[in-house]
Image 1 (cartoon, rainbow, N blue to C red):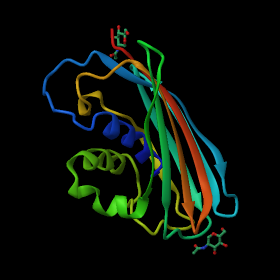
Image 2: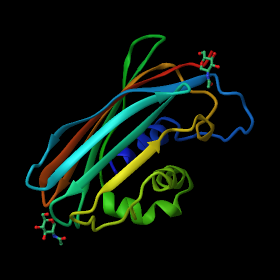
Image 3: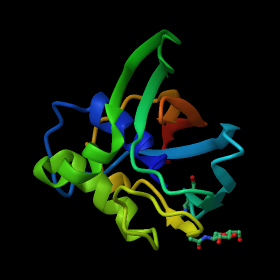
Length: 185
Ligand SMILES: *[C@@H]1O[C@H](CO)[C@@H](O)[C@H](O)[C@H]1NC(C)=O
Ligand SMILES: *[C@@H]1O[C@H](CO)[C@@H](O)[C@H](O)[C@H]1NC(C)=O
């Protein structure tokens, strides 16, 4: 369920210089429209499935994944685009690679990253650390972005993320998410 780290990265990159203003009323909410697996390596991934549930104006992600063998190394490539509603201009927010195993090991040293890693940990049954285990049902229950964890001023618009996971230098998984930042009237 590390796939979700991508989604978190979006917020981290977009609001890099974010200042925490407590008790500020948020005028936006985040609606996830898509969270889909576009490619999976069949000899590694036994099954993977994500569903979005909309409830009380919030998008929740549920899913599960099972691997056919242990995974010791994960390289993550993630790209994120944002289209501001005001001018429709496409902003390339992020396009980079990182070692996902190391990311999970060191997230606790970075306050910002830790918020999100903690949020995934709260909604998964698994110990999110490498190696990932074979035959283990990694599940995610009702994961969501809490607007309270985000800065109060977020531009309205549409976003898309594409995340690819490589192991042993092979593409293992490609996940695409799309969503919107909309007014919370
Ligand atoms: C959901 O949003 C609508 C209007 O956008 C609002 O009237 C309603 O109270 C909201 N529901 C919750 C549970 O926040
Ligand atoms: C994993 O599951 C497969 C298929 O059910 C089985 O053949 C294999 O022995 C299992 N391996 C482990 C380590 O549990």
